[in-house]
Length: 160
Image (cartoon, rainbow, N blue to C red; front, side):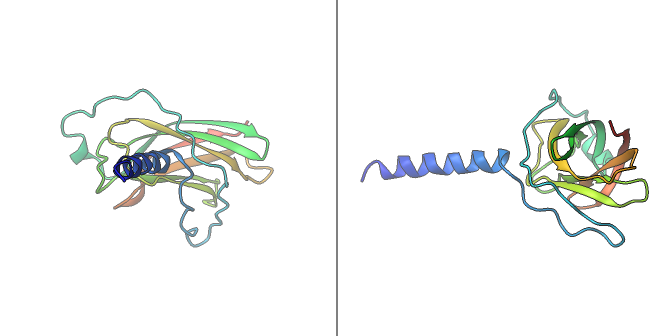
């Protein structure tokens, strides 16, 4: 009976760790006029170098910024590695996702982030298998804030 608390604590720690690196929840429904076809692949924790936010940076940001996008042709669509800067991140308000848009605003895929990344700025996450129609030459990636929605610096990239 003395081993139960230790086992329970270990199980809780493992579940908490899995929640950070495992698959993230399905994205919300697409906005009017768009379609959403999110990939089923899990989030991979590719990370960019971390750094401290400058003093006052949290107060100056209403939205996260997309600072880098790498896109490759995968086996089942396009794979996106997106780097986001959101120096204001706290558990109460944080960058909670990003999406891939066609030139006409059609949503091709969304990636939902389930928690803040306050100790990891900027940070990179990968979405695999985004289905993009033939004939699309470029897409735009934009990030979302948990309180303010989509906004901030976007990045438009050519498809390989």
